[in-house]
Length: 337
Image (cartoon, rainbow, N blue to C red; front, side):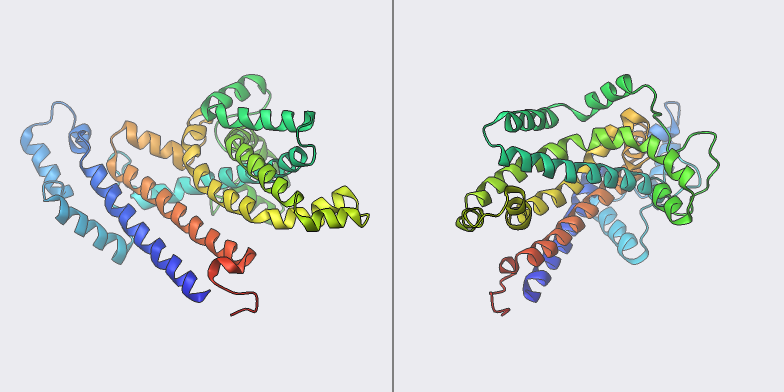
């Protein structure tokens, strides 16, 4: 198992390095010139050339890539923002990243239990009205775009606040950016309640697709386990249906469910771009959209790299959990060898 984990770690590092290089080259080869966008239409060529030299954009692409990797690996530097004065890319990521993490975690806390319960209900009452209802709902959840669902939720739930993370009347300063978690530990339940009111609608919209995917995977996995011999034996011995489902079927069906649930975390970060834009949520996704609109390539590069690194890290942690749930995946036999 140790060899398996080290192999996965090496693959994660290699994937991260490739992602860094690909993102860097893709950003540098875009047709829009961020220096020109910053200087304006009336900038003289000498001014543009001087700014290009100062930023290092006039050097060969491979040289720029090498300098970027050196700064990133040795100093953790991602450069400065073109359009936000006195703010580095790292500072902008740290300012917006906690909001996206809280939004993604809230969406996941909605998607996993609801999706699992819907999938179990559909499997237990297979080919009956609950199954048809659950699968129709999951099909709608996968099919409806997040931005359209968000707009519908805003129009229906007009009494719930949208935009910002806190109402104007609440005076609270967060030291970490994780307002909900920090306020809970501090015992500021009024702040927690206010933050959750602003968080609920974006989290609900963002959770729709992972909830539907988890429901369908849970149903498929549960159907396979419920047809196993040991489940029929437990039922023949007089065990109740829900005891068999919860004690015997669900634990054995949890491996593919845990796998797909972990993968949804990475997709939630991508879906947060649309959700945060619709709900004016001050997170990483809206920060990325604003940077694209302003041609702030350093910020676009930093946001994309952060999402890529998070996705690779989540997959690595998922491999560890997968081996823990089923040691055979890591090459461990039943006797522990």
